[in-house]
Length: 97
Image 1 (cartoon, rainbow, N blue to C red):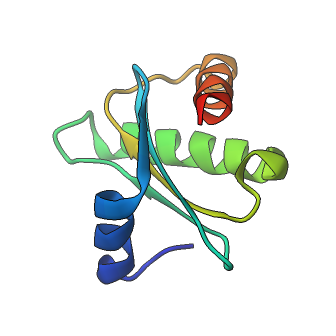
Image 2 (cartoon, rainbow, N blue to C red):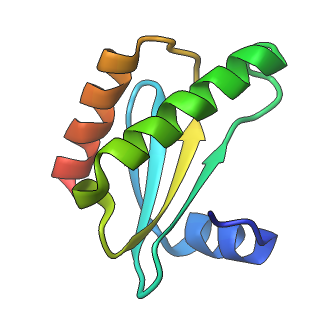
């Protein structure tokens, strides 16, 4: 997990940004892997934001080859509770890089 605000700011400014309809993905090659899921408060209620975070962390956990050797930030743009659709979208975004 990426927790330090300095690490997050660095990755947001220097990482490769890939935009999708639901999520923005920021990638940067690194010796240590890490993930952060960011959700603005303007999006939905807390339980909806938390559900999206859980879905994205599960996608990250189930597809380790997509993110090997990288630090990743997922910035949620809008709510989408469909796991299969979200996994498909993130998979396409990772293949774009």
